Amino acid sequence: MKASLTPTPNGPLHAQHIVALKNARGKTIDTGESIYLCRCGHSKNKPYCDGSHEAAKFSDRRLQAPGGAPAEFVGHAVTVVDDSSICAHAGKCVDGAPATFFVKGPDGRVSVPDATPVAEVIAAIRHCPSGSLLYKLHGKVVEGFATETSVRVEENGPLHVSRATLVGDAQPATQDHYALCRCGASKNKPFCDGMHTKVKFRDAAGA
Image (cartoon, rainbow, N blue to C red):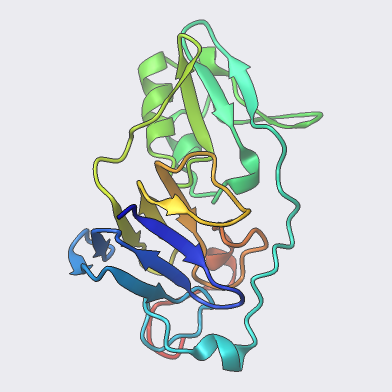
């Protein structure tokens, strides 16, 4: 069966056939074929759903408008593809290639591929956990970053999904890897938008 994650209406994420659910240290903690994962932020049994979304009156309403076509920034050897609408603001790109990511333009953020050696640009993009950044070589998008089908739980942060289909109208830039909110505060549900940092989301029971 094909691995998938389905956001249930105003409820948890239903993960099916994902092979492995991993903790922040990369250790497999569950191999169940059908797992319900909390995304309201209130479960006392994180990362699993315990039904707290009902008492919390969790809403999965997407407050941020869906993005349009990803922007493309063409360099001499590599093209940066940027779907900023699903950015989780993890900062891996800026840390990895600050001269390339980002400068502000009249229509939003702009990447400058040729400002950094190609290998460094690619390495920074491959560390982007949300999949909002991809790259093209010879006109073709390069994917296949992930090597296994899994969901990794970031401590006090989102779910990092690899090689599993997200079911529903909201779609990531790539099904190869993307990040889903589990603090309940994202304005771009089901995707992470970095709000877990602002709301000081914690995994501890009762947080």
